[in-house]
Length: 147
Image 1 (cartoon, rainbow, N blue to C red):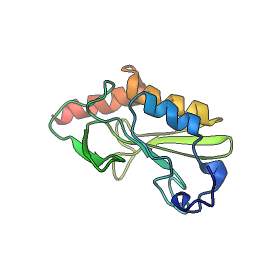
Image 2: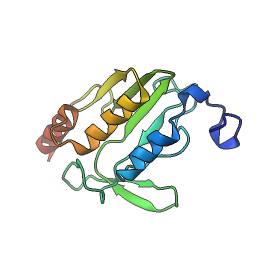
Image 3: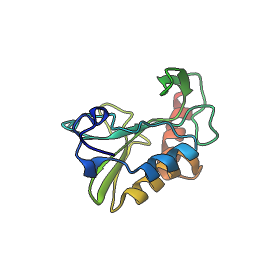
Image 4: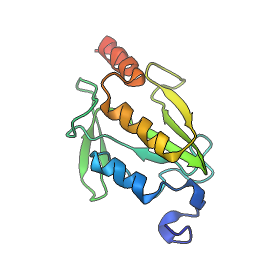
């Protein structure tokens, strides 16, 4: 991962997810890019990644007809019914955030800090795949009330 590559867009190297972290997410079916989604000067998630659990991948999903769509790396539209997670960091400190409500935070919204990229990736996977994850459960409860 060379910060001078055009795809990188000038993101500092210590803000990039490692190839091992990206592979760990992809092996579970989680969609995300090799490069940050957010600009380095973004106020909330500088050089942050946006990771998504497609609706056809087993895991934590909200029921109901209000599903969204995203474009995968092949240009295909894919359904999603779980909030996207933002991940960003610099060096040893990494953040994981879900922010669905404006103004927020709302039920299921959260922002947590971690002392390693590995711990942050674990938190992302826990949100997507642990049915007892407190943030997923809070969001699911709110979704059921709205239905």
